[in-house]
Image 1 (tube, rainbow, N blue to C red):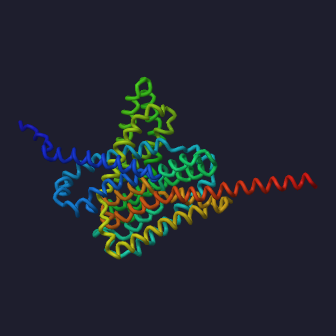
Image 2: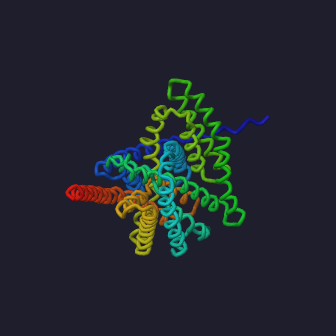
Image 3: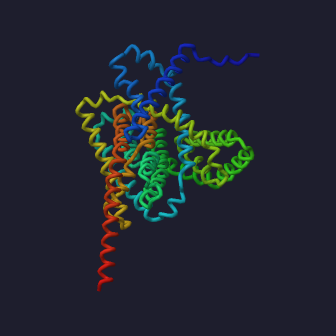
Length: 439
């Protein structure tokens, strides 16, 4: 009887390098994230910069020997780091889904749908057109230009709630009408963004044929329907059992298992695992059985450890030296312009159709323009699937950073004008009232 082959072990050197990678990336991400926050910038900008410092942009040109030792090019070594990053992003997406406030969408109704719809369709269309117009050298070999264009369109149309929610909180606008409208439109954007990413990723993985296109659209729809008909009662039952304990541990473990199983199911259907994680997060948040405070330790672990590590890993793939080439720099500026103009104009049109004034419309455009976390996940997905090469990946990450940095100051500027307009209207109403009393 033949015995089973022994399970291979990681070598001592590989383990040493892996531990140092984790330690240095996390330390730099923490320091630079705090530094960014001190200057009223999103922490994600600092966390991405941690990877940039240790990656091909800075460390490798300056100290190639140290760079090659700390970040060796052997696939198995980088796979260890990627595995931790993938776990982090799945749990981050699951936690994000659990925290979406669908009551906001119900309250804002058609206005949120108009703003989000216009803010999705216009940048999506412009992004797809840009993808077709870019030189072929920016499309990885073996990738159909249509798939590349669709992926770039998705990257241009997404929004990220966390950055703008933090800004609204700092500005004490989170519970104001305009703040609630931005968040409700952002919820719709998130739902559409994850769905579109899953569809285009399936096309990238399986090819561009009529059958693949059909299944790429139908599978996510089928998964959502199955999740809410079958998955929702199962999730509710599991959380109900977990919350019998006074400890938070069973609830956390249950939530993690559910998110990972849903991600695995999504991956098995040749969809993106993050789509399954997001759907499960939504089910957890809307089950009515979740005690939110028990999920706080998981939320803290994800946001303080796993998410910064993922963003630092994403920064490792950036090669800013590519921007020294005029063609790459020109394409980067063009894509950034398309991303900003498309989102601003789309959200602005949606707001004006809902009879909001121009400053409120500008505030909505600023809020929806922030790409942040979602854009980084889209870029990492594209790089992993081979839809983006190093140059286009760097460009998409730059879009995420620049739009996240510009959202807070533009929002503050627009909201200051909203406040001035509101005060002017109050003064005018007061003058009219006094005139009427004299008459």
